[in-house]
Length: 79
Image (cartoon, rainbow, N blue to C red; front, side, top):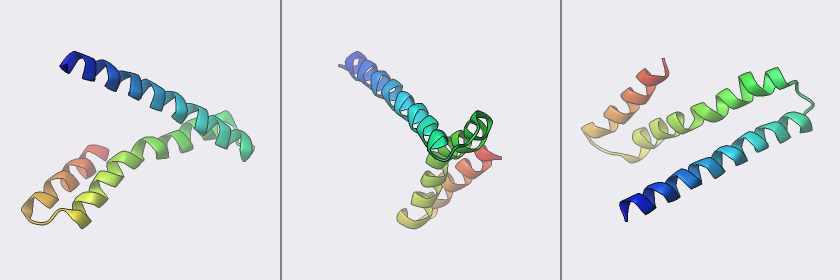
């Protein structure tokens, strides 16, 4: 069961990566941006969003002392 869940998770990650890169390329073509802009700015924003979202969720939705732990860890990890 654990191996099947692991393989399904890997497949979902690969599909998500493919959709992300195709989406970033499409946005770049739509706004007539160079490949350098797409790779350095749009991809960087897209990869930093999950860490930022975790911080926001920890600040607003987790109460108590444990709310500061994920926030500080993701902020320190981004530095």
